[in-house]
Length: 330
Ligand SMILES: [Zn+2]
Image (cartoon, rainbow, N blue to C red; front, side, top):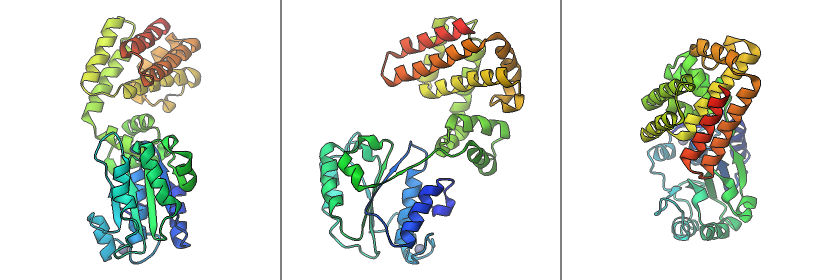
């Protein structure tokens, strides 16, 4: 577990934490919001490590007793709140692990830190129980709520927390990481960065995943043969991918980037701007065949499929409508 300097990007949040430490104005409750893979846990851990470090600087020394305890997961003043039920954090979880222990002074540090991961899973009762604590916390208490969705919190919780939202990293930063730290080729790194949309964890996962590479090849096959395949063949192909644990949203991401690339090439004729650089001939051919309206219709259809899947519309129906639009406009 690293300090702030080892975390890529997120400068605003890192500066916020470091400044709070430097001027001794650490708040009692924070919300760190961002999608999975963006680095909420790394930031929370770095903050906790720095607060507990005996040297009291704005980066942890990684050598003192406290740092070593944190790094080995054994610091008594750093509590990771767990929950019994996978889908929810109940009032008992909060009472037993936070409310009943927070009045006990820290054992060795100046702070006692609670990290609640998946905090959006707190029930309303759990949030109300937590509220009692963050309304009048002891001076040494710091509670970090990590969440993908801060909209799920009660307004009373939101108003008592410092809210920090993780922003997507620039593609160039993600590409740099993949090529320099993971040895990914330039053209592949552009692809992964495009799909990861600023989420480093996702980019790393894609770059490491053999499954993703295989599914990706199969989706390109579908896209290249979309005019020859009928709807039932297309649906079968997607179902096979889904059976192989391909995430449907990632399928749609690939399709979206594919057609966006085609449209961009139609507009610019600049092969350097392509994300699918290795697919130049397919892009060139597609960009002459499909008109501007056609690209727009297809991209809209992919957006709609995504919205329908999120709204739990029948998967086959959502995909069928999308494929119809793709075939009609190709
Ligand atoms: Zn230290």
